[in-house]
Length: 489
Image 1 (cartoon, one colour):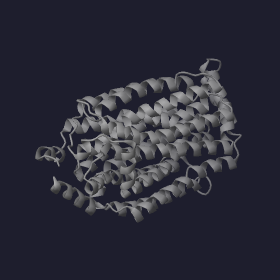
Image 2 (cartoon, rainbow, N blue to C red):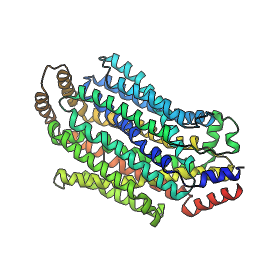
Image 3 (spheres, rainbow, N blue to C red):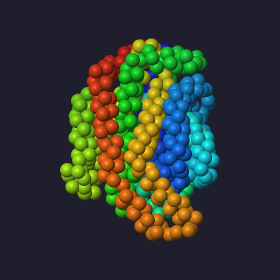
Image 4 (cartoon, rainbow, N blue to C red):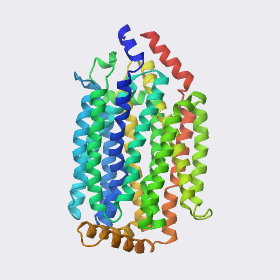
């Protein structure tokens, strides 16, 4: 049982320093994650001049590493759950993770062995990237539900933190496309150094600015084993449902951005495509940012169930419009940007609902079993994100190879390699690249477009149906759980 002082500690309002240090710190994290998750494979595709077999091997390694990373997330949750440091339960891992991960990021975009040597280097480095980012990721997200159990304050924290996540993602997703074409090798190297330093700086803000709140419970008096971890997962039926829904949503949420650079290059050309990717990414940033900013207000007026019902329909309509633009609707960048904004706005709201629903299973578990495991349960979100990334990378590689777009892109990669050596100018790269892109057929472009529209719709609809049928912790039930937990204490 908690003492009265401990109960007051976790229910009183957060101090501003802790709230802002935690939320602002997300900026650097998402800059680093966006660079690697969105552009590492594109960096390899357009700068390394690899054979289809070597690219296929890298894609397979990437998928395998991400699957291992997903499995490693809950294991890291156990390590954090069992940790006993004077400086806190989460903060030491936040610091260690950011330092190691920043070093790996620089190496990934700087060292360039050739051929199969690069495949080996990539496998080792990417595995290290995943494991070191997990140290930071699990501890950072585990810190969130431990700061407050008040639903309004938690919604506010999620909204504010997500805004800074969006700012970090947008800073990278918006700038990279307009600076790499024609000088990709050097541009990615500089970007990696800048992002690594920003990651470190922002997470130092969280490390020094956040005051952790202690929770005294039976679960914190004993060490947890791997067997205990699986028991905690499997006994919480609502966590299983929310975790699967989170996985499905993130598969759908990631494909448009992941394949977006190839889409714009091959629809509009290598030289013009970079500028159009920038404006589309602005829509990504603005749409997601607006959704994060207004979520807390919307959540006060509508139930999560009614929101998800509307959002699913809106996402279907938005993707359908994107699919037929250029086929039935004229292919106009303005129209594509409007459609992109709608997709990202609705997906942003959907994501916020899923995050809150996942976090609410912590109190559900505490209510049923009188134990609280913030780190382990929070690791499910990271597990879902990592596993969805693995699936998305596999889907992306399959689409690019089967469509023949990868083979065309390797001609552009050869140009970028020569530009990196100073053998040809950026202008020569752009002109020659556009000539290669024009060789793509309408069938190849259609395969790419289907991959970024129909697959996301299918998995997001599946996530909505699963939550509708199986998830039971609505707003009323959550308040009841929290009140019952407080009454026990």
